[in-house]
Every structure is written in C-alpha cells, then in structure tokens.
Image 1 (tube, rainbow, N blue to C red):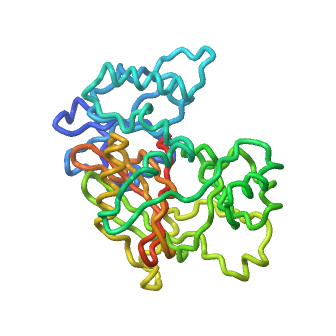
Image 2: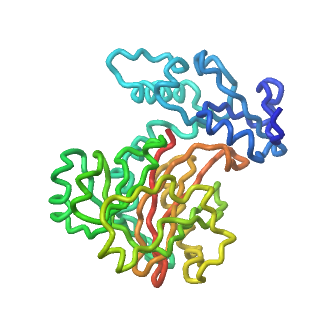
Image 3: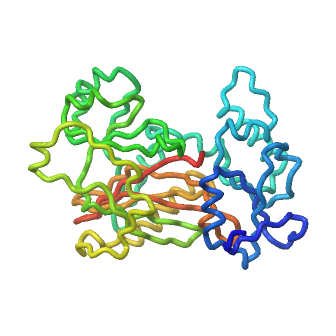
Length: 343
C-alpha cells in the first residue's frame, strides 16, 4: 500500500470531490502516488481503464493524460485504417470533449499539437512585447535540419550561427529521445548529428537555469544546474560532439548550492507574471508550461517552453499550469524558453 496521501476511490463514493480520471505512463503513475497530493482539499484520482471506451467511464470532472496515441487506441475506439496512432488519439479525444463539454481535459490534444516540434513552439513568443515588464524576451537563433547531414556545415554557415551549437531533436513529444541534448564544437562534428534536429546558438548562462512553475496565479521558482559555461580556451581546443542527457532535471537541484549571487539572482517578478499571463492567453489551455531561465549578459531570449501533464501541481479549480523558461536580464540574466508537449 502506498503511503502517499492520495486515495484512489470510485467516483460514485466521493461525488463531493473533484474526480480526476488519469491515463498516464507508468513513470507518471509512480510520481502521482509518491507525491503529496491535495487529497485533503477534495480531489480524488481514479485510474482510467484502458480496455474500455473513455465515454463509458467516470463521471469525471477532469481527465489528465500523458499517453501516446498507441496506448489510447482501445479507449477511444477510433478506426485506424491508414491513419497514424497520433491522429487517431487526437480525433478520439476531440470527440470525447464534444460529448462531455463540462469535463476539463488536460490538455486537449488539438491544443498542444503546435508544441510537438521545436520550430512551431516558438511562434507564440516571437512577437511578444514585454518591454514594460522589467525586461525583454526574444528567441534564440536556431536552425532546423530535417535531412542531409553532409550539408549541415553549409547550412550553419549560411545562417551565420556561431559555434558551439546546442543540438536537440526536432520532435518534442516527451519521449526519452526528445530529451537528448548535445553540444557541437566544430563544423566537422555537425555531420555526426542525426536529423531531424534543431541547432541553437549556445550562450553562457552561469551553469544555472531557473524553472518556474505556475499553477493558476501562483508562481514558484527553483534553481537547476545546467550546461557549464564554455571558456575561450575550450572554444579553441574542444572538438566533437558532447552529449548531455536529462539536463536540468529534478536531480540537478541547485537551490541549496553556494552560487555566485549574480548567477543565483531570480528573474524580475513582473516579467515572470507578464510572461506567464501572455503564454496562458495565447495557448488558451489549462496546462503546465515549463519555462527555464539562466544567466548571461544581454537581452532576454526565449529558447523553449514545454507543456507537461503531471499531477504534481494541481490547483483547487483543477487548472494546471507549469512553466519553464531560460532568460536573460538587462545585465546578467539570460532567458530562453523551453517548449514541449504533454504527450
């Protein structure tokens, strides 16, 4: 028996509660039942039976999902034919939302499709005007490579990108592969990378990122260790591709570390509030958006932001928003936003 405070009960026994039906990966289920949850605030978590249609289960107030199209195929009862699993998952959940309009789905698949790749995810922030919010937010210079590895050095030269370059998978679907990250130091090593991918200019940021979690109107900031700064000597001597798996994950917590004050200083609060509000409005979703912030010098730059469906942060009204960004302040704050997907 898990010692977590979450109590899984049939919804008919606790209809005064907010009933959350969840369909999560095994990893997320483990997180759910080993994390302090708001059970004492009237929230019950009920597992969704994947062998039965979703419409035959419940009643639910909220459906929380982090599943692939393949795992949801039986639940949604959508004929596959020549369609992909992802398309069938999207179609089935859209149908469920239409027949159950009062159920809050975290998050609607049709609303997160544009976050599935690292090219379209930045579109929402490219035209943001946050000049009145104690800072500016821009977008890191990047290049999308979909094929032809032999031509990557030429594409990089034409785009005017400066080495070293951060290489990330083009697709950002929450899989282990989508979390892979590499740092390429020279032109020749670029041909060793595996398309489709995104190349971004690396900027020194003190080796620390800030993850900002937003739940409703509440904001919480934590520090995480990141890629170390690259020295002038390393720029002239390092060659090849260096891999960095799971950068800035929970195990890389830096809140209690003895950091340089200029690195540890949090981003301006008015900027965080404005940025969170803008992204929520543009997305029109009840999601967790991860925003990651770091230290450099110069203008703020948006790198990526990510939607992550997880029960760790749940507000009383069932709305979940998580935020993760990487930023620059006027003097020392580098800001880039990390964008991603819930499924």
